[in-house]
Image (cartoon, rainbow, N blue to C red):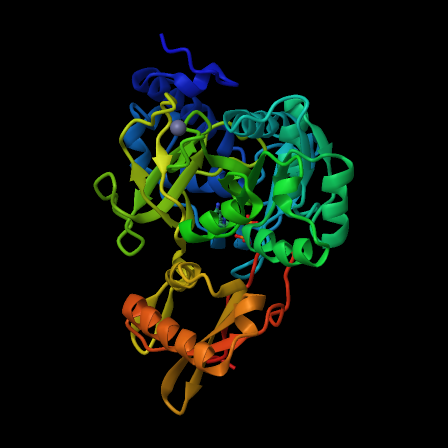
Length: 434
Ligand code: ADP
Ligand code: ZN
């Protein structure tokens, strides 16, 4: 037996036992889902029931659930328990259109908190840690999700919520915060506030940070770790699957363990819906295995990732996902070329002159798409002479052209020129449809 220190022994389940547990939970989930108006009708029409599942592979017979089904059934079409059993609801952020409502029973909340506690334990958080949760509280799952998990672990939780940068930093000083949960783009923006207040994040009691809720590149992580002087762990989740804590990085910081005792994951080709070989990038499809109020079967997340099939050095058996590259919907088509915002971020983060924020603007000159990348510089660079700025502009344009195969217009901006956001960063403004 291995002696890995884990929060939950399930983290170390050998594959056959893990799959056995998955099948058992999957059957219960199908049975539970059938109690909702949407799945009840669907399964009856298609003559599907838990008995149709002899093995995990039989799940393929069940159709995908899409965000649109949740929107069509809004609000209660997928609710699988009597309303009196619901103790809480959350809403997705509505990043890509109408938001969806997700409901929880007391048991759902408890299992979710447990899963988050498992994630935080995995990166070394313990009772006694002071956890400053700088995520928006309310309908968004990022705030309350981590809050409950951290409390469950016994940490001292400070629910500051997002924004009010000066106060965030003061709280870190006064209460000797050791761990933070923060949106990566805000973590970068907050560095400006540290500079203004003349506080070095490295002089504080901070030990670690959790950052998720939006795509960010490895280069961005490196920057954050360097400036804050602590490790940043990637946290993935979505409100439809209850929220943050679906997959989480371990101390290895190489891929996110997807909790396979709580979710059954598939990666499909977003065009054809077929499963590819392990390791191939595609759209993540998730089936909840322990949700009661609103179980979802084969839910198409639209998020792009791939499995890392090699075992993780940490000893946990749950498969890892590579860093989420963004949503299938994030893909930009500029002059016929497919571009992901994260490709642009990767180039920007590799240049030390680039500051804390950027914005991608797509417009049109007549019939031709125009791609503009607006980039904030660091204060020192911005003060530099014109020849130096021109040189940076040229180098950025060339490096971007090389990465995305389209020549962008690069605009250099002074620090703070792009309005700060406290929630998920809006990185792209598409003016073509206006
Ligand atoms: P919305 O889909 O409206 O933004 P949510 O608040 O439920 O609503 O956000 C979940 C989505 O956020 C995920 O589907 C994914 O696109 C994104 N996301 C969450 N965590 C991460 C992460 N660590 N890396 C990349 N994207 C993430
Ligand atoms: Zn690991």
